[in-house]
Each structure stands twice: as C-alpha cells, then as structure tokens.
Image (cartoon, rainbow, N blue to C red; front, side):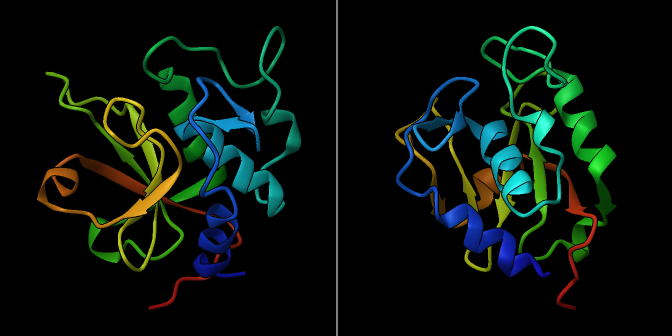
Amino acid sequence: MTGYDVVTQAKKYSRVRFKHQGRTSSGLDCVGLILRVGVDLELLPPELLPVGDGCLVPAYNARPHPKLFALVARYGDRVPMEMVDVGDVMLLHLDTPDRRPEHIAIKTNRGMIHVHPGSSITRITEHSIDLEWERRILCAFRFRGIEAHG
C-alpha cells in the first residue's frame, strides 16, 4: 500500500462537512478524518473510532487532546521533514504561543487534505501548502505499512 492509497481514501470524504469529534461520513473533524481513513485501510484498529465513555480516543473541546497525537505516533513512524511524502500525516500548530500540536492533515502531491473549521474551510478539502500553512507544520508520521515513494 502506498501514500496514494491514503490520499485516495481521504478524497472519498471530500464533501463531508465538519462535525466536532465526528467519525462518520455524515461529519468529521481533523482527527476523525485521519482515524476514518486509517480504519478504512486497516492501518488503525476500529476501536479508535467510537466517541464517548470508554473510547480509546480522549474527548476534547475546541482543540484536540494531546493524547490524540500520541496515538499517531503509536501507529506510525516519524518522518524527517525533508522526506515527507504523499499520504503522510502532518501535525500542525495553529499559532499558539507554545507551538503545540493542535491540528492534523494528510499530505498530498498538491498540498494537504484536512478540515479546519476556524477558517472559510468548513468541509474536508484539498489545497496547497502556502507559506502560512508550511510554517505551522511541526512534524510528520507515516502509517506503518505504507511504502515511501522516494
């Protein structure tokens, strides 16, 4: 399986609207998109999808809980920034003073796929990574089982 398979799966959700903590085709948030794609491709266990009491993914308010990003590291391998490739999962900050991870997106050959309700983007979409987004990228991970393109 390649990163292009990850992107192809993510694009299937391109018209899905934002829903806080959403995990289904009726609504997703940035974390939900990554979880949904990972489960669809059998790269993540399905027990990560449920929301509510006893779920493995902690609930969060406006910003994703830091433990969510630890899950990315648990099921993926860190990729040096100069080697980020199509299908890799990028952790981003949203201009907080401590530059902690607050957002997550999938790298595409044209840019990235994500949902960001704090802007005009209120559904899952693909767009280029301009300087504004590039400076927000903190690190990247590749799902285990995904081949690099080189």
